[in-house]
Amino acid sequence: MQLLKTSNGGISWQDITANLKKELAVGEAGFAASGTTIRTLPGGHTWVSSGGSVSNIYYSSNYGKSWKVYPLPILQGESSTGPFSIAFLNKKKGVAVGGNYLKDKENTNNILLTNNGGKTWVKPTLPVGGYRSGVTYITDKMLIATGTSGTDISLDGGMTWKTISQLNLNAVQKAKNGTTVLLTGNSGRIYKLIITP
Image 1 (cartoon, helix red, strand yellow):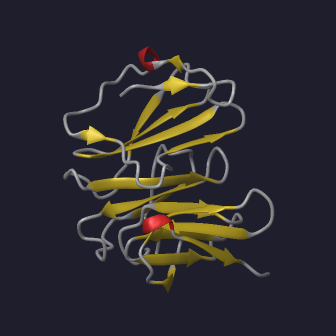
Image 2 (cartoon, one colour):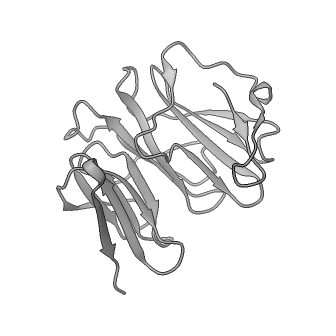
């Protein structure tokens, strides 16, 4: 897996692939459906998720100088399976969503939660409604996940989820300020979800 790092907003890039000591397994890859299989937080924290034949979390706490690898026990084993989006509220609390994009209504083992930065993962009490390719935190308790078979909301930190739409969408992101949430789909479609207190 090639790793590139920028410190100037993308003007120039440094190849830091040599810092990752573990080679990907045969059939292990990253998914780009929502652009959110890589996440960063201030202070040098970086998470990269992989899927396909095997799923892992690659974590760096020092801007990519060194990496730890944690198994991610989400649905995996086929080229169409694995995590398609990750999100972290802070350096400990995070969520991974995905599944099998060829069977987007199945919701077996397609969402996991972590409270220790990705070292270990647990299943929620009530999962999302199917394959999901985007997830984001709105607050510490509220999350939105979306995918080709619908959009879900959680109001308890990700433990239980409720489907709020069955639109075919791909990605979700909260606005930097306020509580507006943007979701995108095919053919350039953009939807705005306004969260009211």
